Image (cartoon, rainbow, N blue to C red; front, side, top):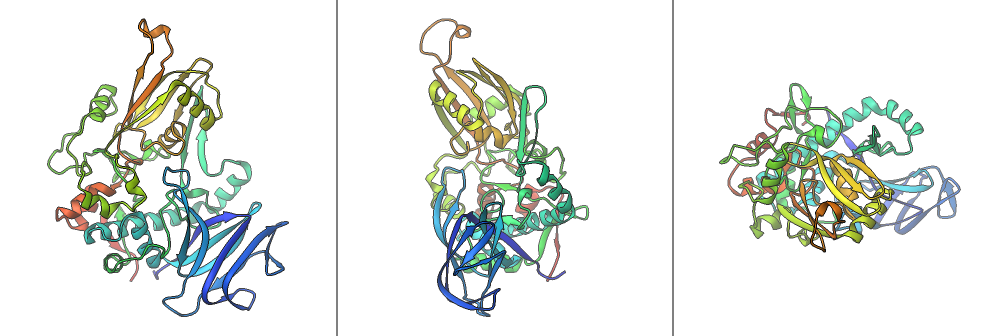
Length: 452
């Protein structure tokens, strides 16, 4: 197998502005440089006064050639969302999607990975952590693309029927259970944001260490019984690993299992049980990712990630009015005043899989974890591993009163499945090799080289 090329969706809009510091060759036979703009117009791409169905811009044979894209949104719908001018190696392709344009970067997988591990975390992280991340990012991408090729025709048929093509969901008996995955991208392999893997081209300089990590693991992927692993990862597991089926479709992966994020403390309470989850979340158990070491955190977290100080344990507080308006806005459902948020089902890390929202007008069970996080935050709640306390303004029987405030005490940042980036960073600092880091977060998996 030779090194694959992949397509990465960077941004979409009615207009896209980009620039070439050196001459690029266009698919219509011209050489261009400088600032360019394409506009969506009546189902066509309007560029330099002419209409096209698709455009490509090929870089010269120059290792330093790149193009720039203006107003790229990073952290879409998350608390760090912002726009940037970003730089990319490789080819730029402009396509039509619906009634807007999409800019796609065509690049080799190893170039892509050098950017991903520098975008997902600081490129100054320990070499062993960067190696581990290169392997899981490569594994996740190749596993997903293999799956997508198999499912492509079936998925296209689904898209024609289902306007909510970026998710899978069902609504049984007063429940709304929904999960999100990257399989909505039918015109490119992956997107450039946290929905898939964070990719920001060469905007953030890759250090020699990041380049070495990708080179040292070139072609290596995680395998389990002859198949590439679906190597998920998140910022902070909160001390316990979540299982795949509690966040996405109901498929159990033997290498994504219940486990404590520690080598010294092996025992993990049964966090499916509400009392155990409550105790776990309200305390600060020993775990690799339970760290306040600024040196380690600065290696893992980019500047805008460090705007969030709390990740292992955190609190969010809402007044009655704030919460009822937030849930109405985010879900599109008027629950009236919120009476209670009741855990219905928890996963292996204490993350809520199903949550009952009780209002004066409506009661509904929602899930899975990301839908819960979306509904209870203007962006995304750090995780769905939380417990709820209610406050009342007047004394008396709580049963007769409407809470004035809800306090959410939570654990972790992200879905908690697979590698915990902060925990893995600590392991790297403690001298663990990347093979040991991977075997900790993906038990039973093996390393295998897919291409030279």
